[in-house]
Image 1: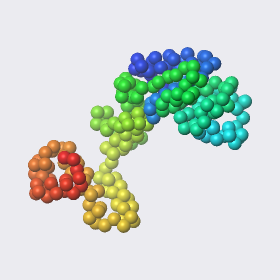
Image 2: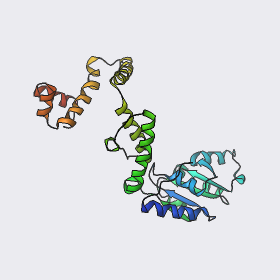
Image 3: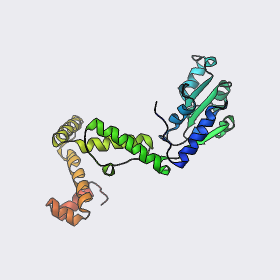
Image 4: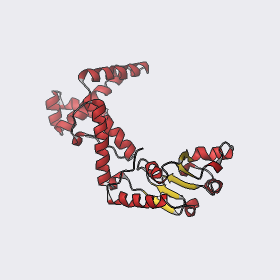
Length: 246
């Protein structure tokens, strides 16, 4: 079972609260952005409990397709998506509930004795570094390539979810050979041709990455034009054509 990463001081405090909550017969609400580890923390509190999506469980209660008496405790994810939250929690009276939500829910806040707010990864530096190393090592094993951790393009827009995707994507891209790129482009362009894209429309898929790469390497339009061996006016027209912010 995956465990909630707790290396930073903030996360250690959260784990301590979670450990205490696991021993008490009270409801727990875990709040935080997408991908911060809410579900992982909930399984730390109730490691052997069933997990229900909030909206699915609400529909199951209404349709009487779930027997709540067989569950002394349960994890309810995405409780913010439940429509009638008060009635929902009343139906779970007598069940220890560990629920997750993207934000605080005022109408049922008082039904949770313990509330745990998990900060985003950008506020948990030590946790972030550990997660980067974990995903990086796994990605290297999958794609069998040697790449420095500093070379990776990291995306934290969805915390752990986007972090993992961005690391695997970055390692994958850097592992591609020339033949892999050609095959990928052939597959991609074939789809665009089926969409009735013509030659002029397809040029953007070659020219924009080329211009982006040149901008990254040479920084100025003069150096870009010189090194790409094209007229500076032509370069400016291309930048304007594609509405690039250089």
